[in-house]
Length: 120
Image (cartoon, rainbow, N blue to C red; front, top):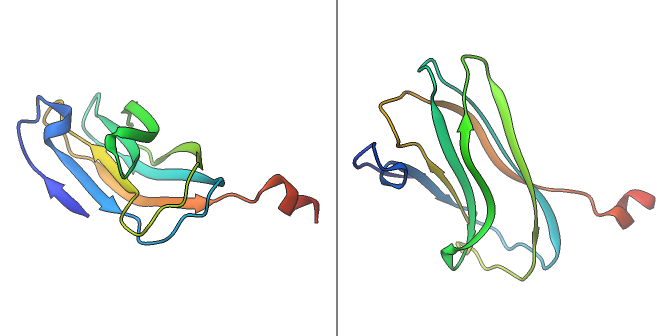
């Protein structure tokens, strides 16, 4: 993942960003998952899944997720509405806003079984 450092008072100024290296078929149902925790009181992060239009094409928006000392899962579902080429989709975690330490154990975009798939 790429790391961008900056003024932590601006949430967008401190980010982790990584491209998904695969083609995502049209109308694919997917789930974005992140497992994270923080020992910093009141720690938060913002999580986005972006298409090739970057912030103009945010497919998942999970702003201001609150962390605790325990490991927690943060998830959101999305339907990819068009064919995407490698590097079209990226996961963004904005971790600015205050001085904090955040531990991230897992980040994944998982394809969900289509309803028709489960009937067979």
